[in-house]
Length: 75
Image (cartoon, rainbow, N blue to C red; front, side, top):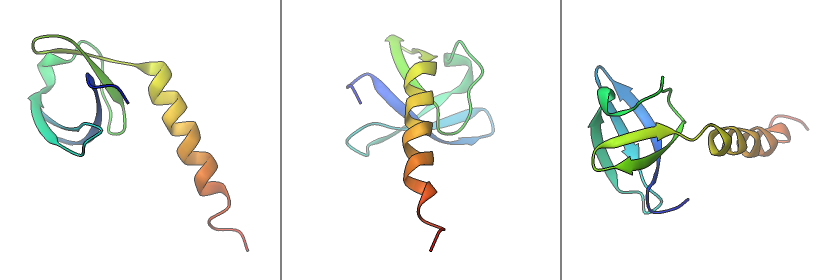
């Protein structure tokens, strides 16, 4: 994950709790994101306080997690 990339850790009302690759937490207002956002999405900082959802990286991350989970519940 690049320096300007963040994972949406959780949504608390109108606030988004983001985590960067160093596990640092920042909180932003939902209105700073141009797209609809969900927990687990990857956001890219495009300007001072503006973010967009990187759909490709979000999908790739979801696929990686799904692949890791496949074998966990099978004996």
